[in-house]
Image (cartoon, rainbow, N blue to C red; front, top):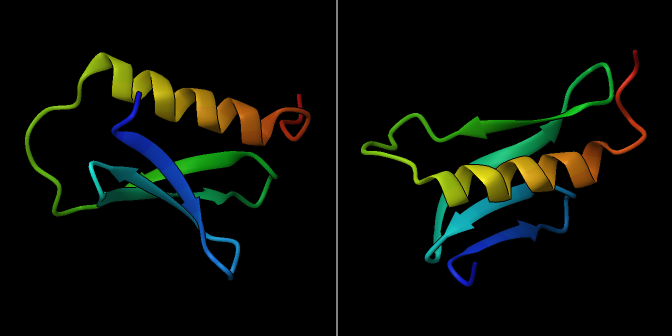
Length: 68
């Protein structure tokens, strides 16, 4: 979707954006898997397509990183 994007900062942070508004951050956990941290002050609902976009980004980043 055009309203969703992930910005990677100079310090390698992955900021999740929706309509130019940061809604959370993707970071690597201690086991190597990437996880999503939503902003706590965020209210309202999340549409399915947005959750799917976040999930797709997590899968893309974690591919080959997740241990069994």
